[in-house]
Length: 140
Image 1 (cartoon, rainbow, N blue to C red):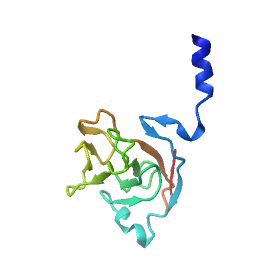
Image 2 (spheres, rainbow, N blue to C red):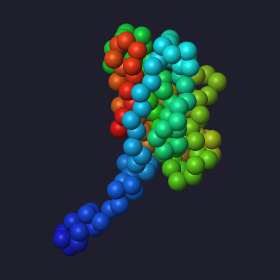
Image 3 (cartoon, rainbow, N blue to C red):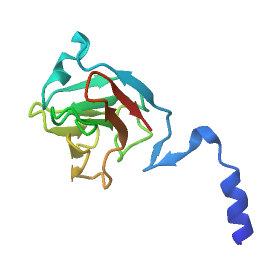
Image 4 (cartoon, rainbow, N blue to C red):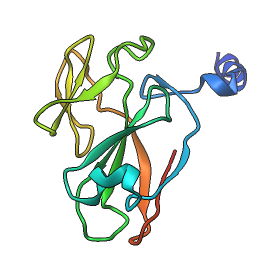
């Protein structure tokens, strides 16, 4: 039995790796928060949608300490309906809550933590590293 499990683990297709029930998509993005395109990211509480990930990414500025922890990058794919491209997470009018457009599940913008379901998992976070000057790198 153990040999069979080992055999199946080697047969996974590389592009079908699943993490936290969302399909894997390579992410390697560089943003410049001081660029006028990203003016909303120049102060705490600012956020923007960007292309990337599986269904888009939300970039949120938590602080302006000019440290690597100033930003968070959150996958927009709902953890409740990850196969449904219409189940996309949107920032709500309060600029604090993220909501799945199909299930109504809610998460916090500052860390992707689940507020209410039917979803039972946090949103996927990407590594967001700010150099303290003008370069934000988002990777998985």
